[in-house]
Amino acid sequence: MRIIILSLFIIGITLPMLYSGTFFQTTKYLNDIDDRVEKKTQVIAEPKSEIYTLLHSKSLQLTLPKSIETLYHDNNYEPIWSSANSSIMITILKNIYFDGLNALNPQYHLQDIELSSNSFLKDLLLSDAFLTLATHHYYGLNYHQQKIDIDTVSILQNALLHSNLEKALQQLKPKHRAYSLFQNYLVNTLEINSTTHKKIQLNMERWRWFSKEPYTDYIIVNIPQFRLKVIEDNHQVLNMRVVVGKEEYKTPIFDSFLEDMILNPYWYTSNTYNEKTLLPALKNNPETLSWRKIKVFSATNLKKGASLNPKSINWNSVNIKDYVFRQDPGNFNPMGDVKFTFENNYNIYLHDTNHRELFKEDNRELSTGCIRVEKPKMLAIYLFSRESVNYSYHDINVELKKGTPRHYKLKHGLPIFISYQTLVIKDKKLLFFEDIYNYDDILQDKIAHKL
Image (spheres, rainbow, N blue to C red):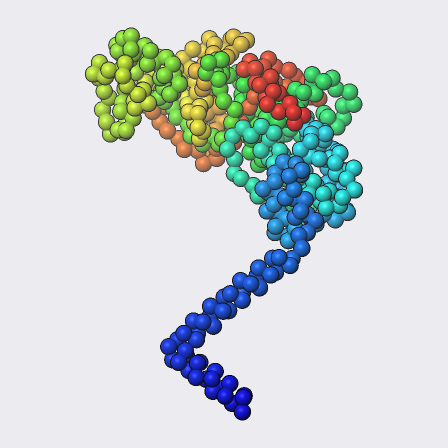
């Protein structure tokens, strides 16, 4: 009887709720509460792993804590290093001397890894060491220029999965032959004085700033050597002197891809030249553009606009970047007969010069940043040959006599490295060059604690 009464009571309550929809709302609400309670219970009940505890302790010092957090979060805060992979990683760290690095750098944790009796701590330190070393191989100890970002966490996960730690790291190292020569020298030379060793480390570091593509054909400029070389199939085919930026107009270090060449080029003055040289001269005498045979244009209307009258501009109150200054082709043009361009953020390019006497100087730190080449026509003929265009000196001279700019887009351009190597290896011998910009000391100060 009680059951019947209770059932009727429930039905009496439920039917109106069903009819009004309240029952479903109430049920959904209760289910939501239940889900939240269940989840909360799970969180409370789930014990923190040893790795989770270590990772969130204030005493743990990691180089890349955010990357480590991502790595172990993806693995439910469980260990990821097998005994075999751990041994391989320790061996890798002990051998980084041959990459111009220091295994005792605290960021690599080598001593703590070898001495630690806590397997969970060791796991974390091994991961941090790999990610740090991968970062150093790819970007360098002192990140120099913008590169395509790499996912070091994924690289480590894949390397552990396939047990190819050494291969994974090798792919991040510089592929340039000069870097390999330094490696071989460190492997095969038992005694190296500290000064030379530091030079090797600094120059290996600068190779890390460049592309990691294994190029066999390329152009390389070595600023302290005042030389440009063209390499084909890893063999030198051209070698010529260059003039580089003076102290106040330092030629920057970068790599790019040369794919444009202009005969009879205009000279578009650089922002640095405009600010440091041209603007002060214009403030003193607006006629300076006339005798320099330079025309001024509005920067916003260069292609369509006519040149402006420099006398109509108040040079004492302008933003010099609002204007573009262009000199026509001719013997007075510092670009000379040929200009070679490549994408970069510095407005730097290779070009001929109307002051060829400068190539006789021993110290050719004389330009306003761009690189003047001794044999521009020879370089042009070589680049034409890569395009299957049989241009001779005569053909180039005929084109030059026309006096109008002629632009060539190269289908088979070349990688170009604007490098700063105060030490190179040639025929197993060390060649030292003067540190004209004092970059060795500056770099040493920045990365000394890592070496």
